[in-house]
Amino acid sequence: MKFLIPVDGSVLSLEAVRHVLKLAHAGLQTELLLANVQEPASLYEMVVAHDPDVIDEVSEGAAMHVLAPAVSLVETAGVSFEAVVARGDPGHALIELIERHACDAVVMGAHGKGMVRQALLGSVTMEMLHGAPVPVTLVKPSEDTALDSDFETEELAEDGPN
Image 1 (cartoon, rainbow, N blue to C red):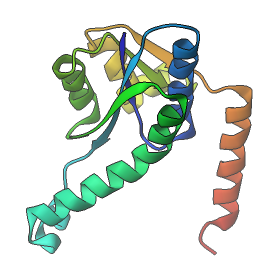
Image 2 (image 1 turned 45 degrees about the vertical axis):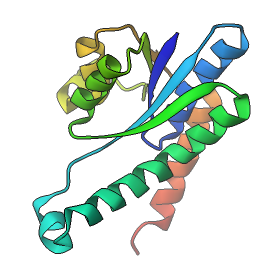
Image 3 (image 1 turned 90 degrees about the horizontal axis):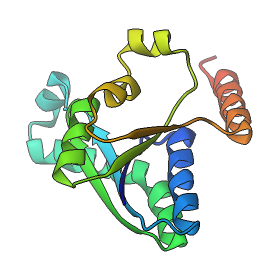
Image 4 (image 1 turned 180 degrees about the horizontal axis):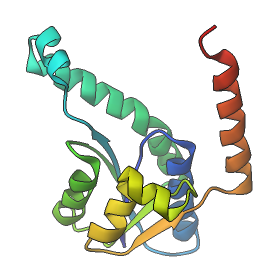
């Protein structure tokens, strides 16, 4: 079974990777498509960079940096995977990846926010739930992950601008 796992650098996207790795260790034949979507360059970035190749290199580097922890987890587990970088609107790009790579399902981290709030924000999660042509599994944060996220939020608040 081929799983698309969107990786955005959050602790929750790594929870989704761990979830699929548990399925693999339980005996499910799995193949992973780890995907990071980079938004298109802004007009300012295009004007300042002058060279579209520079923008592409920076975007690719940023994506590989975001994907690195997930790749490390999967390599350590010995599960077959491919890491890809897509560009554009995240929801549309992920749906295109599902079709292009013949994925059987999507597993992604969920922030655990209310459905109304997510719908109003136009989240990628909601777009995937409604638009993906395959089943979508949302992995909620574990208690440890929730505590880690709270700690990170507190650290950011303390380290913020003075």
